[in-house]
Length: 143
Image: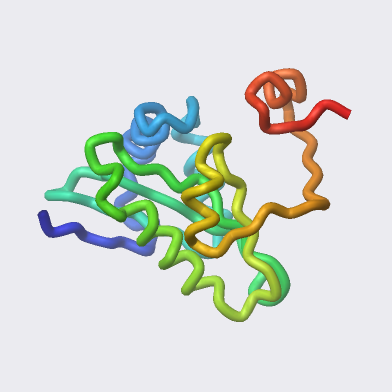
């Protein structure tokens, strides 16, 4: 398996990316929303196997203070091969020089990110569009 790594939005199939997130599973992300979020991200990474999108990730960054790694997804058949780790590593490399690199982990994946030197923040706070759903999913703590 020879993987192709792409760091630009050129020729991006937003429907294919949406399907990747659906089956990864990282939720229902609409193609238009993905185009907006990836277009507004400073660093992006796509991984292809024989022309098929198998993994993706991105980072929002300001160039100095903060880089936020998010939306790292790998097709189930490609999980466990080190692709997700390599994407995060590449996004960390791109983010070098920022005072902090933040990552929002899906519940249950904290140990994976701990192995990549991320640590739990004690002061992180969030407002979700659907606060009740975020509470139910364990993303927020009940005060």
